[in-house]
Image (cartoon, rainbow, N blue to C red; front, side):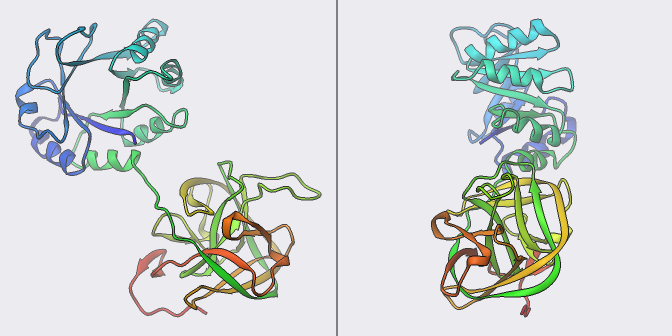
Length: 354
C-alpha cells in the first residue's frame, strides 16, 4: 500500500489542525524541520525531521540533502532531480539508501520511471513529492506500482484527507453466488452497450450487469476466442442500455450514463474487483435476449443482452457460457446487492423492480 507523508514545514498557524487531521486519517509520516513539533506527535506516525544537523534529536527518521551518515539514527537522503546528473544521484540513492525522498522539477514522469527501474530489487523506501492529490494519484500508478510513498505539502485543512483518498482507493471483494437460469427468451430489438475499457481484462474477469439493482450477472469480457473476428480483451458486450452496473463497491450507474473517462468495477469469478477506466461506450441497435434466473434465496434476477452466440456470461469457477446456449437449470454467476438505488446510491426505501 502506498504510504502517505505530509510536509508541515510551511503550514503556519494551521499546523496543529493539519497534524490532527493527518493522525485521524492514519497517514504514515509527518515531515517537519522543527524537532519540538515532532516530539509532540504520537508514535503511531513516523516523525521525519528535515535537517543537515549531524547530531539531530527528536525524530524517528532524518532526511538530509547530503550523504547520510553510516551510523546514528535512521537517515535518508533528499534529492531534487533537475537534470541527468541529479537523476544519476537519485538512482544511486534509491538503490543504496534506506530512504530516498525525491522531488522532480519537470512535469514528466519519465525520471521517476527511471529511478523506480534502477532500484528494482533494492530494499530501500522511495518517497516522491507530489504537487497535489491528483499528482499523487498519477505517481501512485507509475510502472504499475509507483513509489513506496508520496509526500504532499498541504495548503489547507482537508488536503490530508484528499491525499489519502487519492492513493488508497480500494475496492471490496464481492460475494458472488450461483444463479439458476429459469428462462431464456427473445426480447425484440433495442439498444445495447459495449463497454470498452482502458485495461486488458483477464479471461475470468468481466462486469456485473443487471436489469434490477438487487440482482447482477457477471458478463464476460471478449478475451475468449471467437470465430470470424479477433478477440477484444478490453471489451464487455454488456447489455441493454437501461441496465445497472457497479462503478464502485456501493454505487451503480446505468450503462447509458457511462462516458469516456468514467470508472467501472472489473470483477473476477472469485469476487476480486478492481477499478478500470472506460475508454468508450458503443451503443447500437441489436436483437435482444432476456435471461431470467433465480438466486439460492429465491430472489429473481434478469439480464438483457444482445441476442448473439458470442455474447457470454461467466459461470461458477469462471466457466465461459454463450448466452444463446443457456438453458433452464444452467448456473451463472451473479451478485445480490443488499439495497435499492436512488441515482446510483444505496437507499433504504420501498422499491419494486419487475
